[in-house]
Image (cartoon, rainbow, N blue to C red):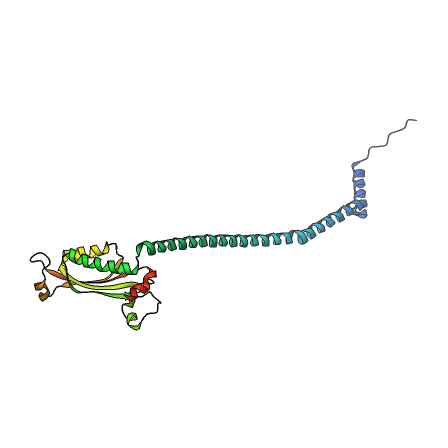
Length: 245
């Protein structure tokens, strides 16, 4: 007898086999032991990452931000200190320049009180004669004591508004002559070697009596009266000499 081969499985049989396998899988669960271990390991790693972020990364970021703010504050203080240093150096240089200029003014621009006083008298009288002017009032000379010095009551009341840190003399003079001559007179005073400050200038037409008696100026020229208030200052070492004279 010949043996017959088993008939090939039919489609119905294959379908039943797949259904049975699916039922077995659903009964035994989706995850096996290996899947559960892998999932637990993943959760552990996730927890470690969250802990590391909260306890290490966040504090370090806050510390970094605080350090950056501190660095900005220190840089601002450094710039301010440098500005103050530069300003202090500039101030020192300015003070040094002013001091040198003041020393030069006192030693070369001002003269000794006794010598300067006599030179002023001679220079003023010479300029009046040089410009053909007639002296109608003055010159009057009033000593000016340095500010803060101890002076008498009479000296304190005289022209205190022209006082300075230097001793000096206040001069008041009135002259008459042609206007052009008066202009040259004022110009000569301003350009003279004597340190003289013109504080007040008053011009007016000369009176008829003075004009008739005047012999200055060209014939027929109208005469003008000029009143000057001036001050001159001397070196501080000569204060006592100026006040005593």
